[in-house]
Image (tube, rainbow, N blue to C red; front, side, top):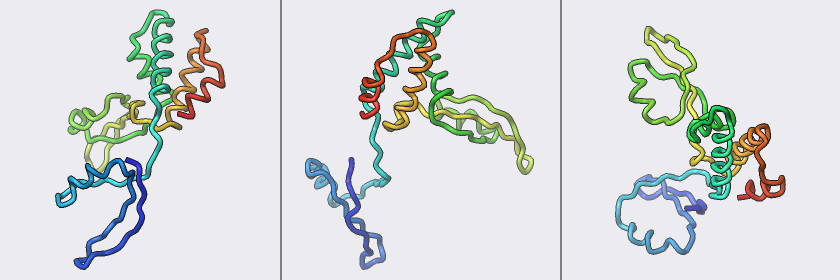
Length: 168
């Protein structure tokens, strides 16, 4: 949920005390946790991408998949769009750990090998699935897909309609 840090301090035992302001509608669920140990993660808030952005991206991906020759599976086109316009980076994984580590990534491409202190490593370009994108990242992704669709003669939304999608 979206909130703000209101105050930071230290308790009598030296523990960090954090006071948060949260939306009122969460009061019952927060009260239920009052005297329990909790798991907490605090990170900077980022706008999530909208479902309309997601639906539009998949609509174009499906049309692209159907229009190429030979036709492709839409998941193959999606993976290619991630490679061209998506978010990701290169990681290095110890060769004997590759199968364990790469289970965490749906989309990756081997990029080379290396050795450090006598240990063999594989370098992998990993891509984040678009379900993890914020609005800005999804906008970049959609812009690339739109250009691909236009190159194939696929009708796309007008620039104004696309701008409305980008604004969430």
